[in-house]
Amino acid sequence: MKEILAIWKKELRDNIRDRRTLLSSIVMPMLLMPLIIIGMGKLVQYQVKQANEQPVKIGIVNESAAPDFVNQLKAINKTDVISLNSDPSLAAKERQVDLAVALPTTMNGALDQLQPVVIETYQNSLNSKSSTAFARVNAVATLYNQSLLHARLAQNGINANIQNGIQLKLNESATPQELGGFGLGFLLPLFIVMWSVIGGQYMAVDVSAGEKERKTLEALILTPVRRMNVVFGKFFAVATAALMSVIIALTSLYLVFVFGGADLFTGVSTTSAAPGSAASSFNFNLQPQAILLMLGVSVLLVLLFSAMNLSVAIFAKSYKEAQSYIGPSYLVVILPVVLVNTLPGFIPTAGFFAIPVVNAVLLFKEVLIGQFVLSHILLTLASLIIVALAAVYISSRIYRKESVLFRD
Image 1 (cartoon, one colour):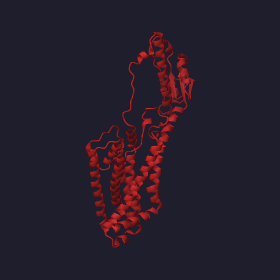
Image 2 (cartoon, one colour; image 1 turned 180 degrees about the horizontal axis):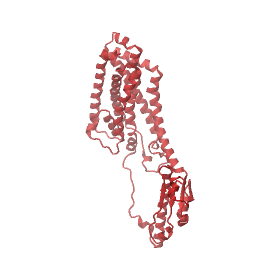
Image 3 (cartoon, helix red, strand yellow; image 1 turned 45 degrees about the vertical axis):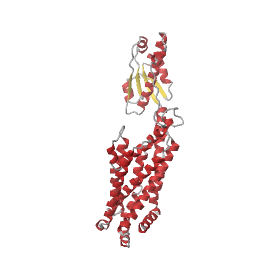
């Protein structure tokens, strides 16, 4: 045990002195994930704001056919309404206007006779402003129809409330903690797996292929230290770096969620959201048992990926070659996780909790919303423990083969 601890301390000390290790294991997890999340939230808010404030030009054919309708369009902020005398389709295609609207010449007469009126609109989908312009015209048409209906009912002495026989009131049955956990479930599981893989990658490469390149591995092997102790010392050093990255990334990310609120997901601030809406009800406080369970599963993931990274990296003859090996292996792990994490309406069966790594993501999503299914927990833990032990065993066997350690 003393030999393992000595090698563990030696590898940690050597890599902590390296700025690249500090950057990949500490600085990036601490800053990169919060910056990505904050950037995503700000981008959503910016896009919503831009869509609302984007100036658009709408061309009207036969403007005199419905002056009230045209005046309502002109009243919209950032909307330039012009009279159009040319072909509306050509005007939209050539981007003379963002949207061309052709009013029927008999529009007012048809409405007076209670006849429906079709208004032709022309857009150019290659023009990003066309959809914004159409949305504004559609909103005016909806309001115009409502005012027209109220006026017709009033002319016949009918109360306008007659059209409101049934009203729907939506009540949220999920608790604020469940809503917050559901929001966290889209990102936290993915980031846990990601940093479990890449958090110890640099150290895994450095303590194996890096030592080969520096010609120091031979000296270490020739010392009176059992080969297994060398393997476990290096393995625990890699696992320590990966676990540190996971904890730092999750802590910084969780703080961003707690202080950032629901606007990171919806683009709507919790302070400005309507009372009773989902955005105003997000609560990101996690239950202690959820934190402990996620930490335990994260440790198993770290052990699994650390052994895998160490096994892959030791086959390489140089640092650069090891990086080329580990890159594809990272994609093989992360792609199924991304797929399962983003499938809409996906309800996993018990069998999915036996699939390593995927089961961890599914379990995280459950415990984040307060669901603790014992069979799912036991199946996930058993699966990860077996696979992690197998990965560690394979790694130790590889380190016993001198044909691998010293191949040219």
